[in-house]
Length: 531
Image (cartoon, rainbow, N blue to C red):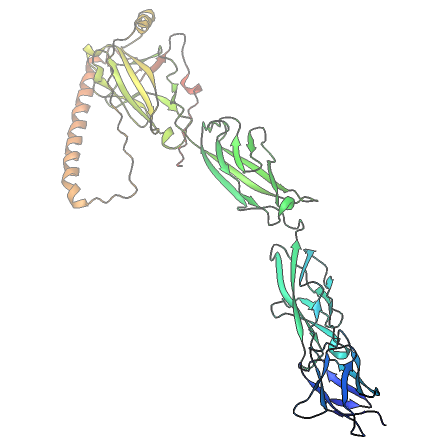
């Protein structure tokens, strides 16, 4: 009696009893057919599969004594590379036959490279050295041979100044980074194996550029100018000094301080508000020049300076100051022979303000005397002249209340002075005149604003339309001059003997307590500047 026979017919690739299967072979992949038979033809033969692995041996219908060896699960080279199974046949007489089959799994490129971190977060200080090292990428591939070798590549969105060694995975930056130009970078990197076709995986790189104190504070203007009305209240807001620093954090924190003039001016460190500790008076100082320093909080700290100009705008806070006459008790002798139109005296005043606030106008607002309207005042110059010839009845003391007013806005300011004129041939009794000056004058105030014409810049006058008026005025002026000349000659001839002492134009100002030398009184012209 002979043992059963097991006859294999391999479907899969088999070399010297070893079957080679690729790991990507599908489930139920046939490996071999096995024919089981009894060589004597007398006994029933059965078989079964022995050994581990994703395999099964089943009858292959409709054939008798034919069995099929096939896979039952997907194969994975990375989990197990080889298996060994046995096909065992036996008959009813107890004879056994064992046919061993070795299965070798072949590797396929079924695994992509895997980065150790899918998101790689990096940081580097700005102003780095060229070719600065950032990191070394690492990816693994579970496949074997070339299929498990990995190369590294930058994604298309990566800036050109980043470099990645495809073999070592070392990531560098070739240029200096500037946080103020760009603070964050985000791009992808690829790990590619050498399989056919190749497989790859992607990781994301984020780079934060850390700040260094490489930017000085910057003022929005090199020079600041502020126009402030005088008498501005102390600690009032003059202006805001704006400054920025491109750095961040402590490096971008800025402190402001006044380098000069700190005894008068202070500045809010945080908000940049400039204030004056005291009220400012333009008449004492019309402008201020300050230097403000901005210092950041970096280590070492960086700084910058800016020039601040403060110009005080004039406020009409000064009334005109009368310099002449110096006293309300002084008087001037006016000879009766004085011709009409002759200058008698003047009122001279100055104003410490500027612009229209310093433009002065003169007017007579009160009169008392034998013929009060005998004198007039020029509203611009303050010159007092004789209007008409003086007669015998015009002798005596004239008191003119002169108002000196500026053109300030919104409310003009003014001062007053009393001009005393004594019309007589001589001063024979000074005590009498002084007693008259001590008495309170009974003067009616005439509030009449002086009319000062302001010359226009351009004026067109048609000569043809003005010609008749000019002719008429010329005739009237000629007649008036002739009449005044005749009256003057008549008066001089009439009183010639009495006043023949060479004192025709005697004009003397006699103060109450002594005489004043008019040449000793300094009269300075007033400068008027437009704001």
